[in-house]
Image (cartoon, rainbow, N blue to C red):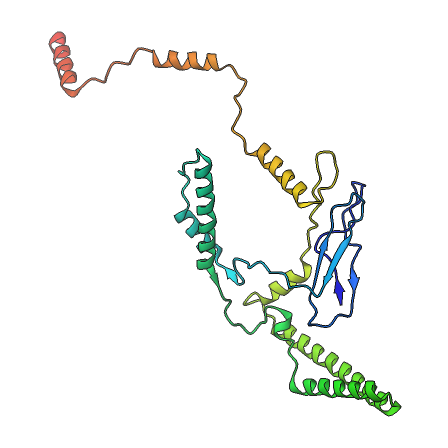
Length: 285
């Protein structure tokens, strides 16, 4: 089996090169033997050593918030309903309580918005249709029995029987996979979007995430360096707006001048308008 760490082990000093995993293990360990692997970032070399623990306790896997599909429209409605922007953030306790409320709200919204995909004729993942029929399972059992017998005896006829079953199993598996692939292609249709999904998965381009670099163009390797880099970046972005440099005094004077202008006389009422008409009529006569 192949065991590799989750983080890169090679940290190049050249800015045009990306970190990569160059140190790994090729083992033949039994299934009951646990193994844990991690990077050692204490050294200052361009290669970080890798430590492999054998026979230790299995690591606890962090549970994810969801393992199914999410209705993002419902998720957005739940967040808009329960999140308030008029939260008081004056003290440290206010910030801690608001952060905890935000985390709880997101968790509850995800729990409500997750759902299981409906059963369709088109499989979602390849392993959902690549099942083995009973004849192939029986052939695998026969091959394992023949291999066990040959390991015990090492007779030529037993080796011949093992090679015969191995070649037959390889041929039958290839035929089965080919038939399954043709069945999948024949089931694709543009009506339910299965054809578009298959083409999209094949033509999807994977974006390469660039490594984190410090202001002095050195790579951020340890978790503390990455946390400090993110903290400094966020502290520089989320700042209040600075005062503008235009002449604020002139603007204030213009506003005061506009407010101090004499008010326009109110419009003439219908009663006064009738009096004026009567007066004009008398003058004309």
